[in-house]
Image (cartoon, rainbow, N blue to C red; front, side, top):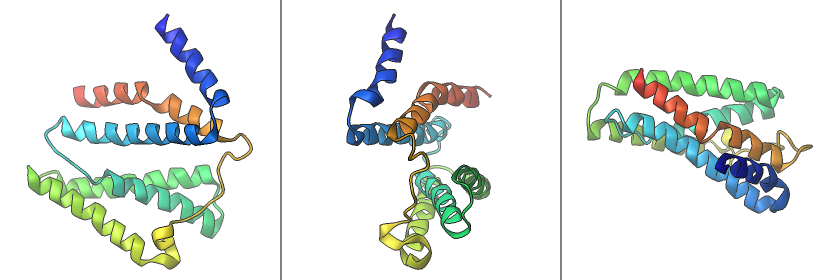
Length: 167
């Protein structure tokens, strides 16, 4: 019964609230995704805070590919995720042997170095203003973003995290 009520609530939410509240809901789902990635490493005894840098790599790659070469946004997101994954594998290879605070300091340094690079290259990244692109699903509106994030978390992410930890 509770699942039916939750399904109805999530189906009606985008049509009954304003776009600001929907934006906050999507931002909450994004934070849940970031928290899940942190949780996977934290359960292994490693505390990483470099996920924000990896998230930024993927986001900037997708936005810049769209702006500079007009690559379709979906392909840009896939390219950004692939680039972020390659950087994460390289960073993990170099840092996962570190233990305790040294691993955390290294991941903080990675994220901060990326932040400085992005701020100091305003012609490429837009500096503090960032990169602006048109909405991917403008014709459908904010409801599409809400539904995409609703389908991706928290249930499927929790199951994925549990599978990774049991492997």
